[in-house]
Image (cartoon, rainbow, N blue to C red; front, side):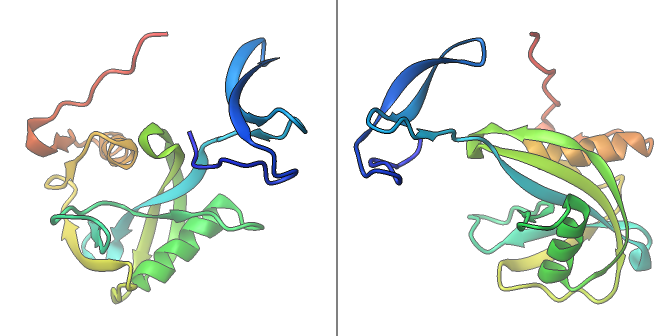
Length: 183
């Protein structure tokens, strides 16, 4: 649920109200006065498994300045209005690492429900000298057979990319990829 308390349309109070929609009742944050609805749909986030071809195909993972500890992960960022997802990930890779993107291929789409996001993950082939943006503190390069995956959207994308290339993904802290829930 969001922190919204008042309607942006009429300034009336918002409340969790039920309406018939999508084939059944659904509680959403709504304005009883004007019927404005906060849909709270997931935000698309782009992610890149960066294969640095001028470093023997090593994978670049970076540490975000806002994260506690020394956790390294994929380069990620939000799409901008008016750009395609491939254009967006090329922009993000360049903005955050200064690397020149040569190829982009979709890996897949992954839930990241904790952050209400939908991860659109790409394999990005890039080269050049790494110069990190202020958002990132440091980076590491990993051989594909040495990189460790993690149990969240971008970690699953990395694991799928490794599997597609014939590697058996290794998981942080001896984690095993959970099976998807049965419908």
